[in-house]
Length: 304
Image (cartoon, rainbow, N blue to C red; front, top):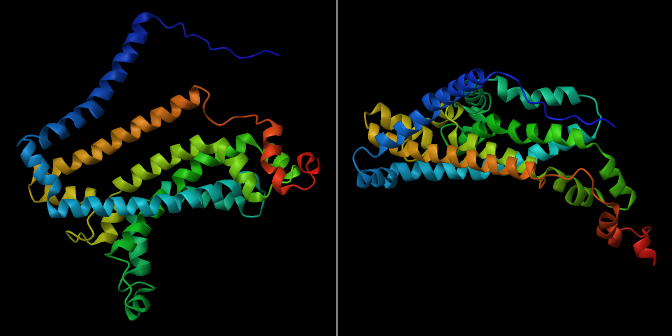
């Protein structure tokens, strides 16, 4: 059987150097230089002022709210992403294409529009506004609205990482596990999850980064209440609009560090996959059989 091999391009040396220089120039101009400018401006008044900008009460409140939002949003999207990917990749049902389209919807809808939708639904003059007021429930201009808006803009990330991966793997291993007597939960835990764990981690990393850095939808539903509903991106905007540029850049460095950490984690996941530590394409049946023997009265291990 013929196997494909890497084909080395035959462009001349000057073409390769030109393309490399263009790529490095764009990276330096649009990535390295802006990041350097952020940190330079943040430290312009010294480390003491930088530290005071981060521990100021409104800044701490913004950092705390950003972390709380991420801690709520990421697990919710994790459950939804795994369930949606499993349903789309492993089963055939009516409306499957429509479900896939809905999963992609936040990619095409402006975050500002998403925020306005939640205002229309849960605002004081919205569809459910009078009922919420009658029961003393507050969603818009409060933490629940921020969480809902963030969930909307981030829920495709995990599902979209897992769907093509699960589709490529097929259902042979799950069917083998079921034949060996595994329950649905055992099949998911011992077969499906190990095969997609790196894709799942990759999706969680991207989802968390977007949740902590979301601006448009959160800006609409938050009300910009200092010390209460401002996340880090909103706090940076307020400081900058008040001409406190150094303090704004100081808080912005936290978001920049988050972006760099996300990039490093993404590279580590890709490196481990390239090294062969990612999902295995073939799991031997004997370990599967041993895992499921306890609950499989028909398995050879349980009849001996």
